[in-house]
Image (cartoon, rainbow, N blue to C red; front, side, top):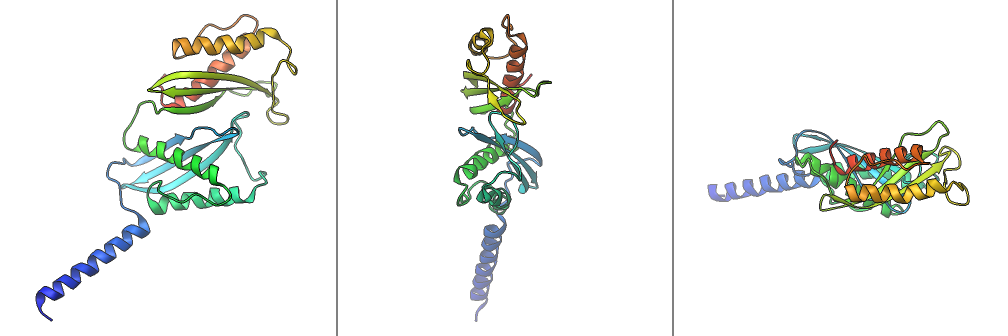
Length: 238
């Protein structure tokens, strides 16, 4: 066997081994800076996902996922009865790490949760690339829990870096009923007027704070707090 043929065989072996390692462990991404980054998915009609991604030397070394209930702001936990979801929350981080990215298969039985996790990780990786601006999308924000265990939430839609829609709600006793305040369950007219007016003021101004609404000052402040939380998730600065 001549030297050229031996050299060619060696190169083939080296390339094969390199490709195998790349397939197993994923290529490093030099555009990612080391650190820990957070991304949020758009919400479904019930939940959204938070991803915390850790990068070391261009590699994803850790992914933590949390699926959060839109209305209450509380995360799904061990009490959630759908077993495939629990399996997905354990399996998906491994897939992100192995792929060193978001080109992964969804988990059977938890397809939508998988899709939200992929979007959340994608947005976290955008931060890892150094993007420090506002990421377009739909974001859910929450106020602090009141003394009565009530909580306000806000859904904002961001397009071209600007808020183009605002939806406000408030939920009672989130640790038990999580009941929305409607005209039937909470017949205080200024509250329902304020929900519309505060959303419109925020939409017109494009940010917070805005003036509170007479007769619903407490709720006005809680809604602004929830909007701020959603804006921070999108990347707005305060």
